[in-house]
Image (cartoon, one colour):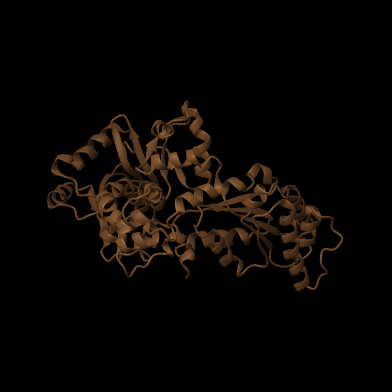
Length: 468
């Protein structure tokens, strides 16, 4: 199994089930750059009849010509004549010549437009023509599915694609357990630390060498001037946005950890009104780079929102690498890692560790506490700070605190957990309320004893996060 396809069984099954339906429809496959969207769709298409066309980064006329060439090749393979007689830019005639290839008595025909956002960037008005051709085919008894693969911002919305049904499948970075087999490190703690730096984007993970140390990977893959990911954060943003400076400022503000609207706005001094931040945050969310999170008990219309960089690698890049890449005369990558990165790693890991804990509850809680999470997220507000919270399939509510570095006795994690639980109404009245203490390192003995004294408390450490 390839790196890009690792851990995608659920998504694979989802797409396959959609493409087996006997009703023509759109399928939108979106997600973060480098997440393996194209590889996943290629895997599905190995067992489907249809056409996979990769849209080039060219103007609309060239888009049309390249697609026409792809369709003509398929028509020739099927024993049909090329699509002669079409005027340049005749999208409806072009898609009509494609649906002629489909077999009304056979399996659904699937058209994949990979990098479909490039059609929008080229201002190609293909959607009405494609929709019309698919509807005409459906009226004649032929099922045609159209799969649009690319970035959220460049793929048409459900309203534009109507009246055909639309299924949206978002490909997220790989969760920790799936990514762990590709990370450098031997001990569970090493693997959690590595995920806190390199995250779960398949393209990033494919560049790592698990046989060498974490520090060596950081220097070789990120910090060295010719490293493959040395300019990753900059190149990803500059490729997809206008006025990148403001986006850089937002990502840099969020690199230190989850923040609310005011903190994000404070990171962009040239925006005088906080409302001006909204378009930038929305664009980053469309690109899959930033996630907007709300507390589990948020009421409709609540403005209680926090923003977090979606994957730890990007948080690491904007926190440590951006300044190193563009600061002239600084030390070598080895000196920089030793003097500046390594001493601050625990602070960085403490900011990304809660997301790893929430992943555990979403995917792997049945191993550690005997039930899966039906609902998973966080709670915050007046007197409440619970980075991990939710409801289990057993009906129990759970509340968790997260500590990458071992807490001290004065931190009193269980006492702070109890205080927050008393202040929230979320899960109130449920028969069982479970207290969870997550630790990325070896928990001190006093904390192990404190947890053991509470019959509804449990310690989940690095070995539990890695699992068997």
